[in-house]
Amino acid sequence: MKKDVYILGIETSCDETAASVVKNGSEIISNVVASQIESQKRFGGVVPEIASRHHVEEITLVIEKALEDAGLNPDQLDAVAVTEGPGLVGALLIGINAAKAFAFANSLPIIGVHHIAGHIYANQLVQPMVFPLLALIVSGGHTEMVIMREHGSFELIGETRDDAAGEAYDKVARVLGLPYPGGPHVDKLALASESAVEFPRAWLEPDSYDFSFSGLKSSVINYKHNLEQRGGTLDAEAVAAGFQQSVVEVLTVKALRAAKEYQVKQVIAAGGVSANKGLRNSLETTFAKENIPFSVPPIALCTDNAAMIAAAGTQMFLSDVRGDLSMNGRPGMQLVSWNH
Amino acid sequence: MIWLGIDTANSPLSVALVEDGRILCEQTSTFARTHSIQAMPAIERLLSEASLRPSDLEAIAVSEGPGSYTGVRIGVTLAKTLAWTLKIPLVGVSSLEVIAANAVPFEGVIVPMFDARRENVYCGLYKSKGERLHRIWEDRHGTLEQFLEDVACIDQPVLFIGADVDIHKTKISATLGDQAVFAPFPQQLPRASQLISLAEQRVPASDIHQFVPNYRRIPEAEANWMKEQKQVKSHD
Ligand SMILES: [Zn+2]
Image 1: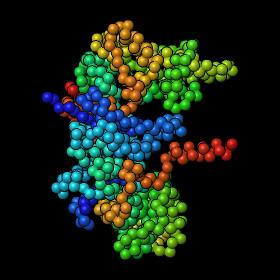
Image 2: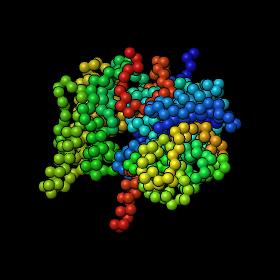
Image 3: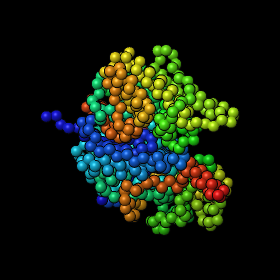
Image 4: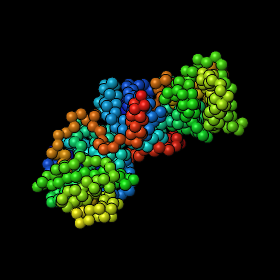
């Protein structure tokens, strides 16, 4: 009988301190997230130095809780998986150094996980991955499309040339005077709106899978500016709806074209912005119509968490990928295949 | 009792193993690589040289700051995670005090100093009494100028100590003249065995989870935010 694999995941790449135990890469045994949103709200965004300070305050508490919730001792674990990058370097270093100390003290192997691989593998916690698959990753730092032909193989086919989708959401939220973090507020306003202001779509070259959102962001800013000069009043709901429609349409149309071209058997969405209801609805309806299986994890697994790091780490563990105690934070880490 | 000491508060790295007042191994280096790459492998090497396992450790001492924010955090994160998972006591010691202890039994006052950029420094004021070190002023962060003004009022020789003292040597001599003395280079670096010897005299942290660096300085964003809050209040 094959032995069960238990991996402790640790994630501190931005403003969540998180730890989780996952069994066999697919079953969440515990999942603990300490969020800093309340503290970072004061600054209207994540201040790296403050994020790092919070991580030091929370890190051992969160790991202890993850083990307690799982009812496991360190000697029942098979490895420790930790986010190695990309992210805020000072924040990454807290998770990495805690992971190294914990792994060393308990004679466990350590595995460095790419944050985006983690977001993709969050889907593995919901249903098995079927290859080839298309992953659409949308978050505050990323907008990417990746083709996976097997576990641990990543082929980047498109990415943003300027702002990430989530970044555009946060900026538009600020323009509309919405509180931090802005993305969910824009989503809510957009869904409540009856009408929508027309904003452009950035399709780029006809065959490109790349994205661009900075032009759209500027259009929203200009629209508000012109309106104010004419003395008009801003319909925030209609602006949010128009902005969201533009983002969602570009993401959906490009994902569908890629899914067809690469003849994928599954499409998965990942990253914080895939918690966006407007985007989820659009992707679900579109792929249902085309009979292409689509999956997106529940919202708690779309935003940053450590279960996804443990899930990806399990697959790496099974492929004999190991890190060592000289692991450093890699803020600009590239997503490369671990299966060649 | 077997102690592990970790000092990564500034650019030098120092780790040591001490058993009942005897140094088993110690490593102090100033190679310009990051602590995240070097500190944990150094600890692993130290234990293997002493033929010890992690579970043989009985207490951990860490240099808790002030110093480089990232450096201090790496040391504290390693130390608190080790102490928590090995279920052993953790003691934090001021990183300035660790350096000052190198100068015992100097007769005058001892000023450990780290550069904090933009003409600012972290420094403290200590005095040896026999073999012991006593803190005279709280460790602080401030301008070098203000600190030198305060020190000039003390009618004793002042020993400046720490790897960053060289950066400010000219200014210190210009202000204090003969009152200022400078420690020789072997005394400039923090030594984890020294850290352990100070830690042995302390009470361990009551809650390891709550153990955090002693930055001696709030982040700029937080300072600005507090200023804004005051302005908002005064406008009300
Ligand atoms: Zn993320």
